[in-house]
Amino acid sequence: MKVDGCICQVTEGKRKYMPLLLLGDEQEALIEGYLDRGELFVLKQSGIARAVAVVTQEKPRLYELQNIAVAPEYQRQGLGRAVVEFVWTHYPDMEILQLGTGDSPSTLNFYQALGFQEFGREKDYFLRHYDHPVYEDGRQLKDRVYFQKKKAP
Image (cartoon, rainbow, N blue to C red):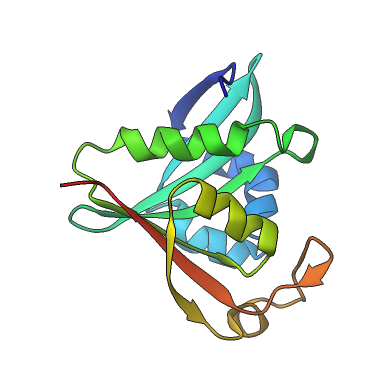
């Protein structure tokens, strides 16, 4: 699916995008923990931010997608997929892209459809790290599911 718009890296004023970032991670303190050390990418259409992603380099050739969010009225239009595909091609040295996400069926299906494979779970992560219950698709998130995608050698 072709998505109109441009994806650009934001290096200054990252907190301006906090409302969108909070859609992908409801705990602002956690966002603050990775926002400065990460690279922020914004997908804009007609000059308006519709989707965001934060990526950190964890080790040589290993990157982590810390946050991805799409404005609610633009979800299910391919914007999230476009951002992940952009990140996948943006780093020439990347061999592995990993992420952790909630155990919501629609989110798990999204990443699996993009070629990510589950490689672990952290039981009760959302119960321990968030100061409020987190819900997605009408159910409370408890476990964090870890995914990774590897580039072919």
